Length: 102
Image (cartoon, rainbow, N blue to C red; front, side):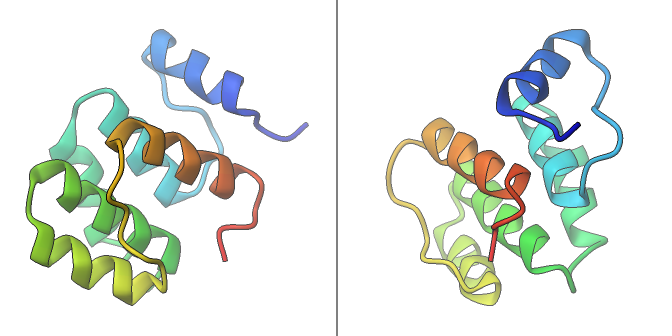
């Protein structure tokens, strides 16, 4: 059975990351749990993964570091978001869960 957005979000309430998920999704999970450092550590350890680069860019948007965010979005091949951060979080999760991040 594939992971759904609702199952992914429910795991946030449980406090236990879903398994298995990609490093990019795991970083988004930690970010939503307000552990930016854990999320950032995951994406930094996976800099060759375009999905992680996308999340890395989003994390720097959260941080307010627009220049760094722009770099990571560009590296991931995605336009940098400019709207609501949580709406973008959900959109990225949906794309990654569907396996069509690229």
